[in-house]
Image 1 (cartoon, helix red, strand yellow):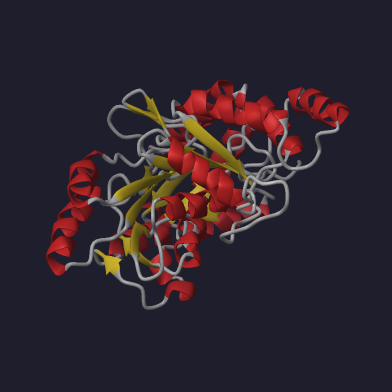
Image 2 (tube, rainbow, N blue to C red):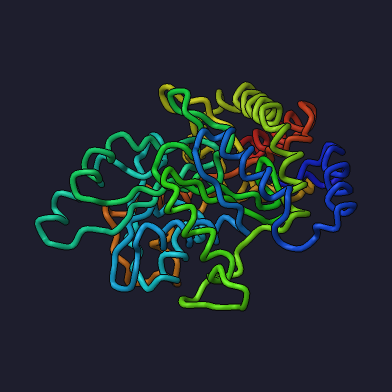
Length: 377
């Protein structure tokens, strides 16, 4: 049988038509009509007024933090249970990441704790410049507990929705729950441009500044004039054409991933020690990846035993994100909370294959092997 990957790119054929259109127009360099259209279409889909297409989600977050005013010496608070790209742009700007432990039920940033911590930080005279909430595995972090405290203290919320395009909270799309947000179109995401991202902003001046910085900060004069140093962060017209084709198919892709998640739950949720990441109240998760934790004492096997059993059958599965406060690159950074919740999730959590081209027979095969790992011990 062919190898089952965690979340491979899914092409429908529509990408070819738009790519050929881009080639026929000779717009193969960065920028072009497909970039403009992709920005408009993503902004409309996510219900945000302004969008800036970028070379990656990491680049989009870098720009979001810069236009939010993050600079050398600032703190930016960010969830610890996430990919490093949620925090590395903080360091690009000379700021310091402060990691926030997870809430045990939702796995997301403990926003209630953060709201209380903001008041304490104000008393210390050391408020963060921004807070980056992270939507994990297709489930949204509810920012509501944070909003009032952030407004009171002048702290900007940035939503990292790289993993949650297509999800909704209270009817609002992922990527629309803060004044600044970012998306990723990396090769493993629910839609892909092979590599790419998007900055979304409520304020036009933020979007205009991000677009200026992303295009080498070139001044609008005939010669090449640069008063500040910018970045080469814009998306190419060819990749935007791929993204447009994929975006048009987003709703079907979300439906498929939710069906895969439901099938895993049907087959595995009754096993002792298994607990799946659930969508919260008023949410409709996209379930980019199906994820669960395993209690080895109850199940009879560890998370790593399950991953090994799947690997033996040429099926890819992975642990949850290793918390950033445990990463050597961030040694010495402060953590809000003990970090024990996110560490426990990492030690017991796994991501199951969830690609949109999986059949229900594929899901059943994964589930059968995973369940047998417990009986084997």
